[in-house]
Length: 454
Image 1: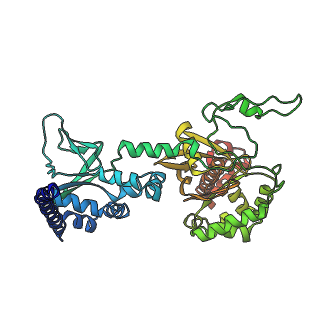
Image 2: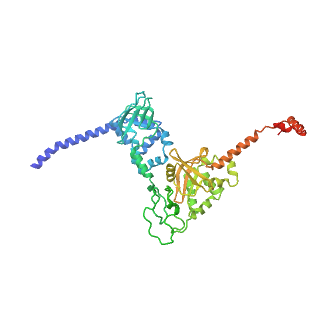
Image 3: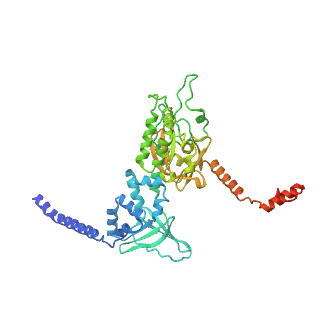
């Protein structure tokens, strides 16, 4: 009897829960039906903010934004396309697009969306006004107004207010990307030296990259044995930011097939696309591929700065027709070190300018940071690191650049020679009558008084 009483008391509660669930289902269905052709999400996908719309699709955020629009109006601060194409660090963009970093990409995009409607009006104000707004990423952004009427969201200027105006939301165009602190921290952790992957020599001691000293004390060595570290490392002039070099011929296999390594990286260049001219010079116009294979077989490591086809097409016939000029051009693009895009970027970030030796002795190539990337050379003859880490196997590293590099001394000499030729060409010539007069005066020894006869 007690059981039946309990069952009768439970029936109203079950009916109430069923009604609640039906009400929630109806609510979600109404929210989903609110997304129509006049929605701000549809306007974002069809707007000229194509880079942001593409990232939203890649981050799988359309369903999340539909739910947000169904609950309340939203405000989207959309960076212009240039901020996501040219102005963004290519390594940071590559970090965002990696499948393992989907959470960071979602956090970054949701940081640009406020779950409330913000109508920005460009009016001059007295003093600086600021308001804080929570975003869908659980962080807050600060909207400030200046005396001039300009509006800023954090440090990004609002360049196009009310770019898209819809009943369920508004889009404002901003000058640059907003990066939350959590995403920046994830990217910095990835950039740490411990994450650099490289082939380490067998039996090499572990070195602290900050102090450039041994992490563990070296075991006691027999008298007369070689030191655990070279004298250069022992003097510790500064930490080396490059990855460890590949093991030399003294390893377990005693030798490398350098020709196979070079053939592999040339095939990679061809499959990558856009570097056919570089591969043609290495294989057909010169014997550099064979020489590079011999160097790698002997245990050397190389970094090749490969100009793309666009850059090679700008070379003139005179620059390539002189005997040995193709070899000299390529020699200046080969660094006898193993460097990756990350190691070179860390070096220029820390030291400003870094000079690398090249196989075209004694010329060096200068690298520096520019626009979030690495720039080689100076002035008009500079080139940017365009396609990083095309090929990296611990022995050969290929980095694509968008220009052909020439030594500074050679460029200066060519300019001086052209200036001299111009001076000779504009030298005035004496007329026939003046020449006869100078000869007559010369016969009586008075030509020295006339500068035109000298």
